[in-house]
Structure formats: structure tokens, C-alpha cells
Length: 295
Image (cartoon, rainbow, N blue to C red):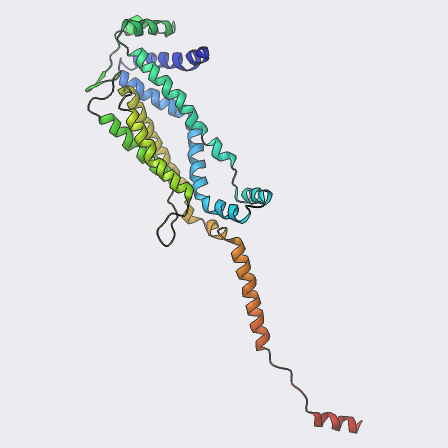
């Protein structure tokens, strides 16, 4: 397991950062910025798919809840109705794939920054064991780990970066959450949207708290990655149709009730029509007797 981790994640990150550091004029902060863009480009198809799936699933929640309520005793019919509206429960699990990919990247980048910017003899020895032959480490040492007031290997002492991590992640989560549908009393009638709204606050708070202890270089990665995510979320909100523009949610909220109301209305109208028909004219009995006498 350590062989896979070192050769596939940690060592490539260390050598990639050193290569960017050498190409960008020995500027480690700029190397982290370019590294962030490259990682986001590699995971762009998965992240866009996850964002599209998340927004689409939340907008379809009224239809999904109506079908679940109507066919809760008939799972087969429920699956058929899900297929009609284009809902696949497995998509919710597939949407978690980009998040699972992010965790090894974050852990690997954390260890890579600590290893590259380490100032102890032990960290320097470990760095020499991980550097590829095509990276001339002797020409790069000592690596500059300063940026403005920051030591990129240490947490931000002024707490500016943790605040920026919280704000950027909050805005990114906000753009991913579609507008929730509320009833007449102003309460949200979509439990999934309510859960997403709670995650909108818990995730930024959690990562902002982590940034208090993470190296400043990793916090910079968080901020730049969230800014790219904000751009993706804004683009998707402009391109994807919103739930308010789709009348399908209203149709599927209570299909049985509408069908019953239509049949009841037809019965009522039919009853009214029969009531309005003029009664059949009855011929007087005297005329009948005269006709029979003539015959």
C-alpha cells in the first residue's frame, strides 16, 4: 500500500512541484497556483459531471418525492416512473466520486509541501530519496518558502487564509445549490435541499478550521481551487435551466389527484348536461284516440 501511495501520488507531486518551481523562477507560491490549475483541469470532467448531477437531482426532488409517496408499496412501478423522468438513484453515488478523488490529492499535497519545504535534516534527507533523477535538487536548494508575510510551510499567523478558505468555499457551495421551493408558510418542502443548505455552512466551517493548522501553501490551494469551482458553478447556473422554468415538477406533484379531479369534473359536467336536456314531449291522449278511431 505504501508503494502505491509513494509512487503514484506523493512522489509525482513532489517532483511536479519542484519542476514548476524551477520553471517559474524559483517562486513556490506560483508553483502551487499552476499545480492547482493542472489538478483542476485533470478532474474537470468529473467535477462538472458531479455539479450537474447534484443540481439536477435537487431540482427533481419534488417529482421524486411525489413518485415515492404514490408508489411506496410498489417498488417496480416506482422504478418505472423514475425512468420516465430520467432519474437514476445510482447517479447520487456516482456524484460522490470527485469528492473521493479530492481526499488523496489533499493528503498527498499536504505531505508534499511539508517534505519540499521542510527545514530539518530529516526532511531534507527524505526529499533526496524522493526526487527523480531529472530534477537537479542541488540547483534548487535552498527552496524559498516565503510569500508576503507567509511561511508556506506553516499556518497563517494572521488568520487571513482560513477566512478566505471559508468565504470562497461558502460561495462555491452557494452556487451549486438551486433555489429551494417553499410552501405558502415559507417553509422548505424539499428535505434534500434543506440538507444541502446545512452542508453549505458545515463544509466551509470544517475546512476553514482545518486551515488553522494546515500549511499556508495548502490553504492557497484550497482558495484557488474554490475560485475555479465558483467559475464552474456560475457557468452551470447560466447554462442549465432552473427548476422554476420547468413545469414538469407541478405536473408530477400529485398526478393521482389531478386524474381524480378530472374524472370528477367530467362526471359533474355530464350530470349538468343531462339535467339541462328538455323533457320529452308527451302527446295528449285525446289526439291518440282520434287517430285510432280514423284507422
